[in-house]
Length: 197
Image (cartoon, rainbow, N blue to C red):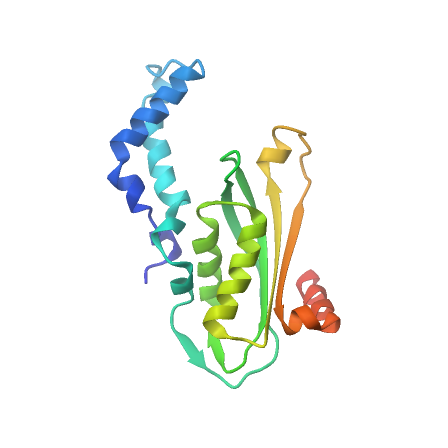
């Protein structure tokens, strides 16, 4: 599997001419002069950007965890502060922040970098933060069958900060718990304390 940056949306590549045409039409419809120098290459640039920011459609997120390993470690594993960028499916406006993942293995572990790949595979598509949070937890549960998984996602949404109610700096925090983390308040508290350090 290639690196995260290798996730490219092939449908965008296959439909490059149509997407460029429609971007140009949108620019015209909002009142822009598409013949002016600064906009001449904009439809092509937007299309290349779409290949990248929607690259998550090119992979099954379960495959992002790659090869897993037998390991007898059954204590908490945390990867925190994984930066993500996504696009709100309601306004196609960016939202971004950090993902914190913790799990208690039950005999299977994934390489630590694979957790970042999972975040990329899930977030690089039209999304809502609540779904990103649940999908990461569900995929970790399905692929690794750990004793428990906990995911906390922090996000700043431009659809709320730069338009609409215009509340810059506001953050949304979502959480998903599976297994022991759902049942054990002390385990949840330990995870939350560790990601704040």
